[in-house]
Amino acid sequence: MKVIKWLDAHFEETLLVLLLVAIACISMIQVLFRKIPFVTSLTWAEEFCRFLWIWSVFLSLPYTIRMGNMLRVGVLIDMLPKVVKNTINIIVDVINTACMGLFAYYSMDLVEGIRRSKEASPAMLWPMWLVYIFMNIGFVLAVIRGIQQIVIHVKNFHKRELTTLEQTMQDAAKEAAMAQEGGDK
Image (tube, rainbow, N blue to C red):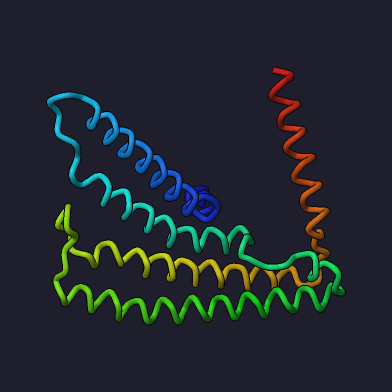
């Protein structure tokens, strides 16, 4: 059960961190190889890093949904009555999840077409459907996270949520307390 809770809280961010570390390491190795005499540079590094960036974009979709960081104007919603605000949150979650579901559905056709074309990447000669499959993974995970958000908002419909300003102040107080604890040690 602990593993499932950990995955629920940290799955996407762990993947994103790993992808960014890989991009940084491969880019640094490529720069070093260019500067070392008699060592050939990596012909595949730029293409592989580009693929990692693309994968990180699609894997960030479910992360932003889970963290509630999708683009929106929180101040306007904060000014509304609690029932209206919670209703709007659920409606936005449903629309967002439906859009991600449509994207997931149609991206499957796209990936299948690329798989049938047998297109390969120029430098690494990977099948391009392997690059594009992360689009499907990102959209499917976004649907799952969207459903989670709907359930969370429905369960907490009558609970008072903090306004954007209150949440920011609370987060700042937590960070200050953590910094204070770190300074005391």
